[in-house]
Image (cartoon, rainbow, N blue to C red; front, side):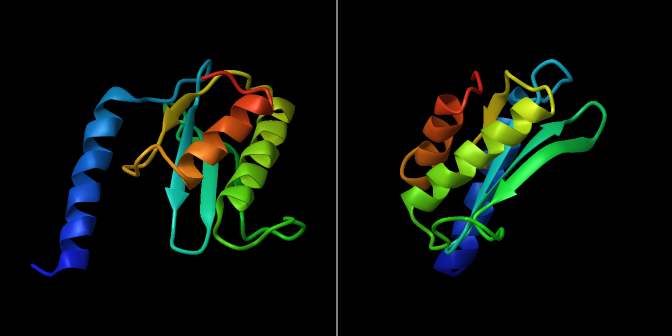
Length: 119
């Protein structure tokens, strides 16, 4: 198996392990993060109802920094926190999506906390 395919398989296993423990409820929805090479996406999901309450991405119009760096991730975290508060969400559980909690994922989480989300 080539190196990139092995990385995908290992991340898939981590995602399954995380999702066994983390579930979004109406009182504490799940903040799910996806990090690609260029962009970062986050959404707040109620798993019991099966719907997304709000989302934010570094690809949206009006984002100050569209490159794939920690500053862009922080901007996504702040925007997501604003939208979540507008949707009536104050507490979430964090789903890092199989990615290590450092760099852009950590920047997004810290900015969401700074924006008023509790997790």
